[in-house]
Amino acid sequence: MHNQPETSDSASRDLDTDLEKGAGQASFEESVCGARRAHATQKPRASGDGPVDPGIHTISVNGDFIRLGNSTYRRAELANAFAGELNPGIHRRPPTNLANPVPLGLASFSYSILVLSLVNVQARGVTNGSVVNTAGLFFGGCIQIFAGLLCYPIGNTYAMTVFGSFGGFWVSYSAMQLEQFGVLASYGDDKVMFANAMGFFLAGWTVFTFLMLMCTLKSTWGLFLLFFFLELTFLMLTVGTFVSSENVMKAAGYFGILSSVCGWYSLYSGIADPSNSYFPIRAYYMPNAPTV
Image (cartoon, rainbow, N blue to C red; front, top):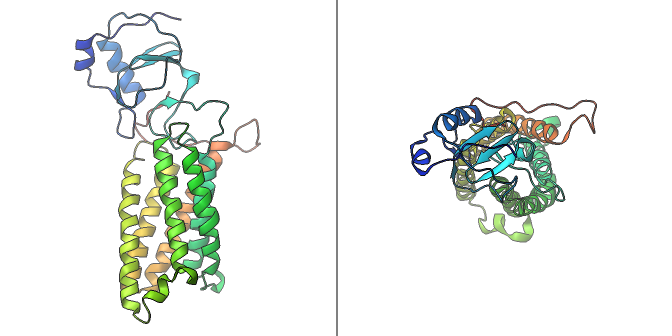
């Protein structure tokens, strides 16, 4: 192992280019420059000395070796923010004996929002959205929750939160439309009250989506645009439900289609590479996204 500079306690306190494992950190290059200026000599540590601490880290680099806090890793052992894994910040790659559940979650989400949005825009004259209930209940709901749970053992908190939450959305939304749950029947002929209650339901998801959007500002353009268009989708659905406007609901459908396209792109860019496809595509990082 190459020798690296040792971080003193005072240098760690003075370093203002710390990397936080999350969406609000400095770029890797900025952090490295700050770490190089602040650090003195240090003893080497073995590669992969435990998981990356979820707190705030100082960074130093020496050739192919990168030090995050108290642990040292090879570049090949680290992954970029949201690079097909929906995991913010520079982080350790998941164990090779575990599959990456993120593409499954993206497939479930992108498919379900596409079907719902095509119905909302009344494509080919379709206005009966009953088919959305089965798609949302099983593939959009159960499978997406399953993908979220699979993110737990690989330490991917963001993906677990996103897929688990939206999986719950699809299950609850589909259940509302099914007669067996009696939600629609409980409102009887009071369509105004149901519209207002449904608007409250969608407004909550508008807030949640906005928070998840804020966590993608230093990720990839595909993921950022997915949540950007999804936020507009929920916003239009909320407004359209409150005011009972067919045109606003159609606008929500078009934004949903765009969100779905971004989801398909992110999915494909995360699993396609020269070893399995003649047409791999790359994920384009946003400004200041941390990369290795």
